[in-house]
Image (cartoon, rainbow, N blue to C red; front, side):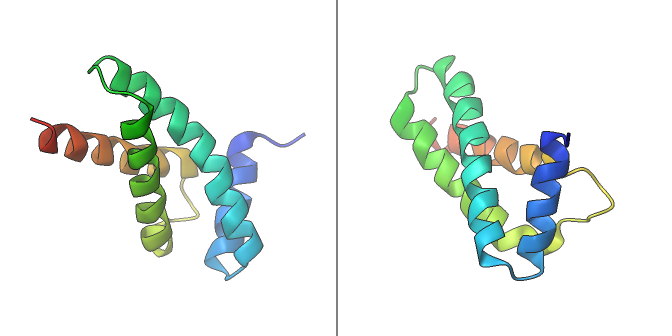
Length: 96
């Protein structure tokens, strides 16, 4: 049995190698995790699903654009979480 980290990392490596189906699968899997993360975080700021969905799209776009910068020697989820966290911080700054 493989862990979610192993599965996501395999999809990222295939995506980096140009596998479009793996790239779509990676973004789809990550979108579920990102959506839950943003809904949980934004609820404490009185924001809802619309803002969460906007942030999911921003994070997925950043992951797509920056996928070449992912280092396969490292875990994938901390890399994704850092992108998600910075997108959230940017959103909260814009919302002031």
